[in-house]
Length: 369
Image 1: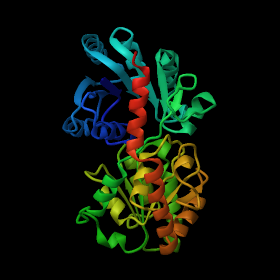
Image 2 (image 1 turned 30 degrees about the horizontal axis):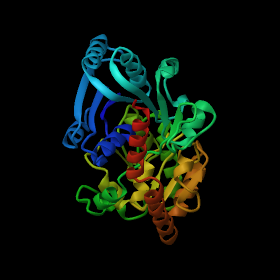
Image 3 (image 1 turned 60 degrees about the vertical axis):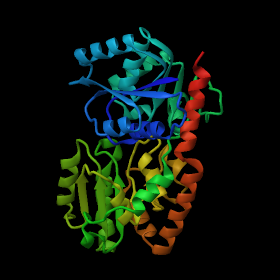
């Protein structure tokens, strides 16, 4: 079976990391993967090739770059695939159109976030081309409900062409990497008190400004507390400025892009998210694999991962006061440890990548004539 993934870029975020895990964990020698990306970040390209996938860069300089579109069209005209599986709205629109002129048996899309989090033009184009899909996958029931008002966990059949397949991670491998992480790059003075961790892109949907504001209150109660905000994105300088304006330069570190996140999970006492939109957040799963209690906003997708009072605490979005109260609450050693251990058990039971891979392959086979 020849499977082609089409995605916007290969930055180490949720959707590209999911593809890498699927390629790595597919043991069937009759299945081959080609991973195409349209533009920008190619960080995971080498890892995907090492895992056995062919990687193709269409090299777009701007959105809808005509030269890149021609390269993409020519590529799909020349190749044969059993499945073309597109991820994220921009690539979904392009992939669906190219497939109409190509030798592709089945076209799928995966929706990784709620439609409100997409640019209006991109969202509109995705909606117009969605009828070209043979199947549409949501990464959480909350995402599926946001698109169609109903949800259906994949059980071998589709519901009106839709199903939900949870994102997953390689829980054991991630936990092992955290346990063996080299902590030499971590400032030990910053880990004297409770250490909080946020791992996500620096974009509006992640609302890290709220998290920095919450941290100002936490520090009033726990002066030695420290927060690491690990990621990358257009709001990096805005976050650094907020840290300076709140006089938190000794208490909050905006790291920017890092080579590895494992050492940050290793020194953290709790994971914190202030997002206002999510699909099925990989970082929350990673935190649970590291047995960290999770403090997060009570939004669709997240509420399917974190069980409030059992594996972490959920608070209203856009409420730094509630966020700070929950952060202080989980910093208690016994309570945080109990929540973290429960999270580790839950992520192994519900979100291991083996189940994700199995569901995807089952879906592909159900669609091929």
